[in-house]
Amino acid sequence: DGGITQSPKYLFRKEGQNVTLSCEQNLNHDAMYWYRQDPGQGLRLIYYSQIVNDFQKGDIAEGYSVSREKKESFPLTVTSAQKNPTAFYLCASSIGAGGRGNQPQHFGDGTRLSIL
Amino acid sequence: DAKTTQPNSMESNEEEPVHLPCNHSTISGTDYIHWYRQLPSQGPEYVIHGLTSNVNNRMASLAIAEDRKSSTLILHRATLRDAAVYYCILSHNNNDMRFGAGTRLTVKP
Image: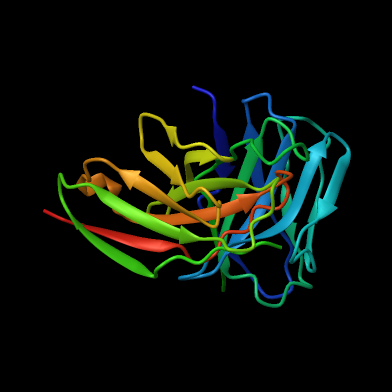
């Protein structure tokens, strides 16, 4: 079945450490997105990518970095500069970005990051 | 950015219809109305979207007011598996989906 796979499901980070969250999709979608969700709140956009080798900052990009070397993959690195990284991280994809706003996003099941 | 307003929570009885409201008085002519739902510890799931006309699919119906300043997601027969947080979102270019706090739906047996 086509879908989005996020790994790991749970991740623990030590102070001052960078960690990378994996997101892979086999839907042949051009656009991919990373969101952060804090308890009881909605999702906030971190980064998005419309095409391979291109990505744009979202609303809360500080302390995060991404790469898009392959269409299928959009890993997110939470750097030590992110002072409050404990959250639920969600990856999504859509057929394309931009356009007319009529394309649904498909989400993975998330990675829960905690600080040790 | 156009914003949406939803009730924090709603309750429904199993096998009864549920009408989830959303107000978006500042909607622009190019904004699509999307609905997603999220179960605990899972990613959001797409439910339905529309622009001006009412829409139906296997999961739900979307009723859009004539002036487009409000919409209603209709679950025709609620089941226990429909208990989730429901998000109403406006989007005009696919990069601008902003998920608010949503409506937490509780379904009582």
